[in-house]
Length: 206
Image (cartoon, rainbow, N blue to C red; front, top):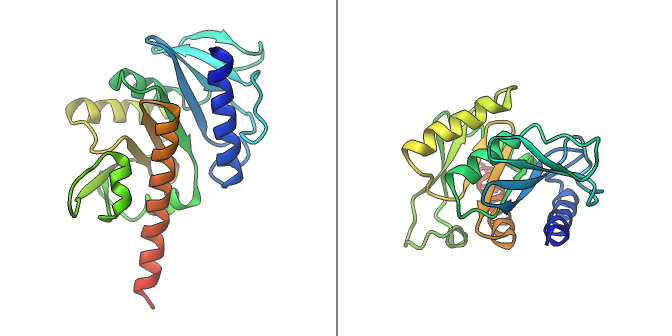
């Protein structure tokens, strides 16, 4: 079971690395182990070369429960994953990547959300409406990642997000889902939407 879960993350990470979403050691992926803990990519690991030795299991309080290698330490962004698994018990995976498009789009709004275009692809995020008016939550970036995690927790505790995704300004996008497959689908969809938004802005100037 553990091996299969880690292989799922390894495969996804290599794909995202090849797409330019996880260059160098950027980004982090996690998968739920049980109700109280999850596996996450260890800090400082190339996402294009992950092995089963490159993971850490932590509980929802951020405490290390198990190491695949004694030198591993949790990703710097573990606290964001903690918040997602705490607030969304149904979440089985959480993916955070640093794409160019996500960072560019994050600067198109000065508010706490980005309005998404009413594309057919929105259905893939679980929104089944005609001419959907959907917003993606936007958070400010901080050097101290727990500050970002606390902001996510505070806002989502008051009002749940419209879609299982959030954007951090000049940082990256995070998505979560009820399975690794669903989570990857969500990520691919939001990245498509980001590319569309940027292409539409360029087209409008022609």
